[in-house]
Image (cartoon, rainbow, N blue to C red):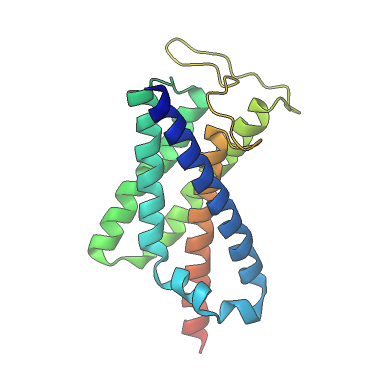
Length: 185
């Protein structure tokens, strides 16, 4: 079991680093007219909804592996993050089935709120709590300060969630911006 846990932690930590690098490139692409026209950005524009579905599905699957297979108890903030991530799997799945691109704004809103919760959780987990808010273990849940994973010096489970939320929001935002630009011309 220990080798399985190590593999999962390494795999998802590396995936988080790749997602973080992609986030940086996509943010730069939002403000660079030259990068917007590259095939790289257009690839993500065309497939934003599908990629958002896959990211939300994999994040949901991973959270279930961590809690139900490995046995890491989710804390109160983890449950809030799950609410915002799990719902997106269903929304994006239905949107893909119905070819409904209008769902993108809802994904951006859900991902933005989820990212705020994940970032707050991460900041508290690394020991900086400027608002002096506590997240104590409530009943059956673990303490929000408990760190089950720390890899590559910064990757924790809340950072994994934060990266997934931000990547989903950016993909959808880039896709919506492209749609708005197309409608203007």
